[in-house]
Every structure is written in structure tokens, then in C-alpha cells.
Length: 79
Image (cartoon, rainbow, N blue to C red; front, side):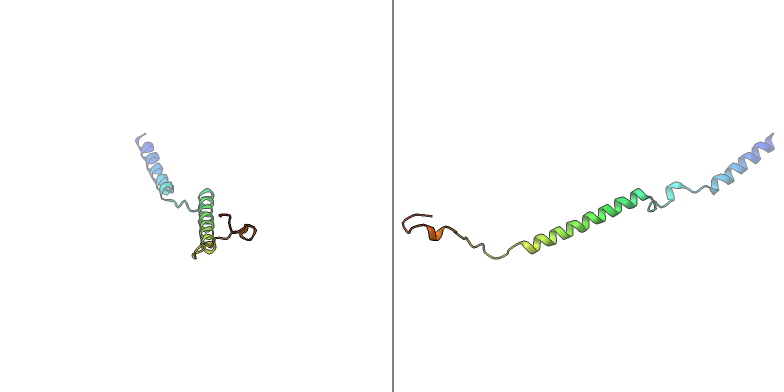
């Protein structure tokens, strides 16, 4: 009886050593995590393009005021 218990205990210890530990496995292969990383990359790329477009469209010079009705007013009327 003691031999049987010892053999079973020994086999269970050997079997436990052969099981991979899940805490140490890389989770980079998980499709959900890969999808999230790709979405984050896409979001960052879109944000960079948005900021670059804003920089291109901004004017650094002084803003010139234009009065389209200036030639329609008489000289005695105030703007």
C-alpha cells in the first residue's frame, strides 16, 4: 500500500513538472491582445496625421480683415 502511494505521488510530481506554467507564457500570441495593440497603433497613427494636418492649415501671419461691403457704403456711414 505504501509503495503504491509512493509511486502515485512520484508520478504526479513528474507530471506536474512537465506541465507548462501559464504565468510565464507569453501572451503576445493571444488574438485579443494583438487586436488591441493594432487598434492602439492605428489610433496613434491617426492622431499623428491629424496633428500634422492641423499644423499645415494653421496660419502664422497676421489675420487681414476683409470687409466685402466696403464699396457699398457711403463715406458718411460708420463701419
